[in-house]
Amino acid sequence: MMSSTNATSTAPPKTQSQAERGGGVGNGAGQAGSGSNALSWLEINVEYFKTPAGICKILELLFGIICMACASPAHLSGTHWFLFVVVTSFISAVAWTAIYLLSIRQQLSRIPIDWTLTEFLNTGVSAVLYVIAFLVQIIVWIPYSRFYAQGANIAAGVFGIFNAIVYWYATILLYNEYKDARAA
Image 1 (cartoon, rainbow, N blue to C red):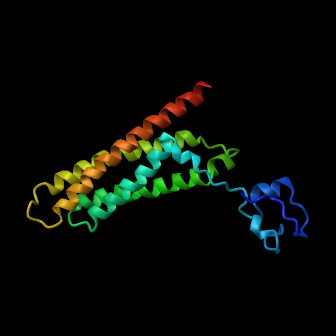
Image 2: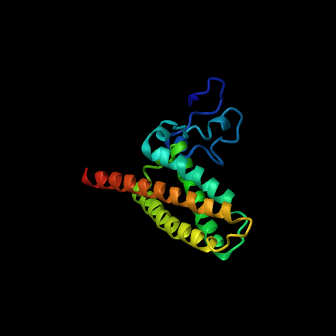
Image 3: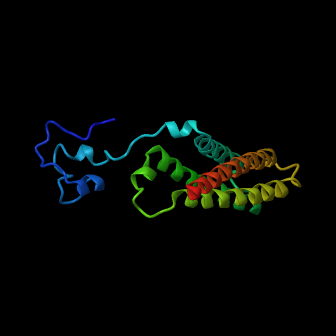
């Protein structure tokens, strides 16, 4: 990691509140030598992705990409719903992955947000919507046996099942984390 000290900088040292904000207009962030530290509060956290919750995030993204690839373009109205759920959940998973990868959750711990509850609710809603979406996707495409895109769309539904399972498991992990945090 880069150290927060810069031996060649002639700018005055930042106060604690300026360092926490990461610089900005009027506090020297645009001056030479101090702009490189504007994002020094971010830390790459790869270790999280070696935990069961981190592995779930990676699988959510992987299965989401496969679902989007197999179901696109949407030929039937049920696939529009399926893709809406997949894309919405994928964007949410990308956001949570970035939060954990960049250690944003730890850096913003003084903001009164219950991060575990927020992620638990988000993941739980995604799990429920995925169950509905994969059922709709498979039910809509089963009668179209002669349509050229049936195989890919059924595969999208099957990968939707896998992703629903991953989201349910992640929801259980988050519930246990939330329950343990409340007990402490």
